[in-house]
Length: 331
Length: 285
Image 1: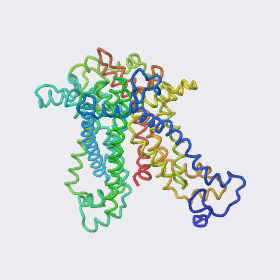
Image 2: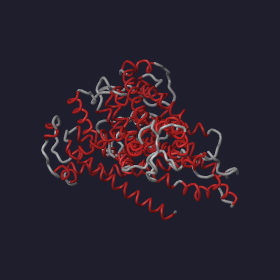
Image 3: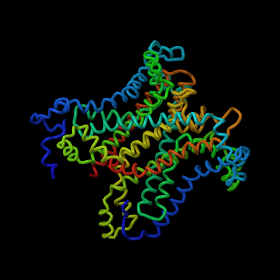
Image 4: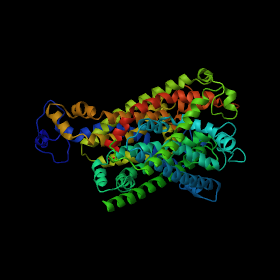
């Protein structure tokens, strides 16, 4: 094919070497094309990332070192620097603020582990069980993806209605119909709110795991299954020996993404519980939002956010290190 | 999807499949059923004990929901913001992904790592600084970013950018470079090759990225609740207005939820095979 013939005339800035200067008078000069064009193409993305992500983050870090209360919010740059004071208050676990943050952090960790684990389990199970064709598979796939496609606030509001004490479906089924509870349960108050939040989060996120695993399954070569079938492997053995190991690289990314989304989740508890979440549903993002916008102490709020970011960065780094090494060892 | 084996699966597998898929079906469908059935009940019926089947059917909630809350207004805001964010995000992501996929330049790795790691940032960390930046820019230049739809578009499009770029890089990588080179030999510049060869060949991936960007913008709650005012409120915040101090109009909430969900869900389900194809070719490889 022509491919090999034109390999020597690369499109532009391949690092393969400058090569002989070519004359293409009717186009952008070679020098610009080679060096500048990629940067030009990236410019909009870089600008947007700078404006919306990077600069605000740097500012947020700066704010965590300021005494930024409502008195300074109009001219925040004039707020006095306080060194590590905000951090000291926030991590002081026997003080009220530090204690509240710690319990919120622990709740978030427990919530994340449960919700990510269940979402991954359900998504993987459904994708593998639906790998072979059967009647109604297309319909089921559409149904399973619906929770993920629904706008978050719409579906979480429906769950809030289902969990209502007096007129919700959950109490109607558990109490009125199955008589499992002595009296109707409060699902959105007290400790039960933790489980309600996990259920809603899993309901929303497992279809994403399902979608990604379905896509991952398509990259497993069919020959692997055929070869193992000739060797006499049953379907369960195929799942254990071929499907699950082949999904490992997909899972590495999937679990990380689910972890970051779930840990950072603000919207689900915010819509489910409203402005004042019970302790069981007080996820870190919502907790920081509360302590910033209710008390108007943005310095402390920023310090909490920075700690949260450091934690997420640390977990991500360790996770990638461990999973990549394991992959390398098995390869 | 390729079948695992030509043989019929054993009974243990068939039964596991039946049980698990049935449970998942109930789990997935229950809230949708509750949303639909409650939206057809009069207010007294949704305020009292739940009933599986509506005793009195009514379409009133679908009429009243427009008056209780300026729903049409919120809906228009959401459409403008989401479509704007989607179009901009897709265009920016295509250019960036083309650069990353086809060129080896200094800072390429720094760029991809930085962009991907922004996914990790807790939104709450840059919410207030970003808000203050928008206000500051507004005061300095008269350009209204805070509280305006433009500001929301700018914010939301950046949220979907990292994932979109990542997915498109994977997709573009799967298109043989020989195709670009052939186009360039035929007299196209690099941009010509992008528009005439790479984009048409990766349409499924681009559609997938567009779906993702639209859903991200349509569903965002945190920034929408801080950066909008009465005139620019989106559905994410507006739907809360059905809960007043004294009453919650549950039937109207359900009707409105259903109404704002139908376009997104329908679009998503129609286009989901592109999302699967896009993920297969790009992200999960």
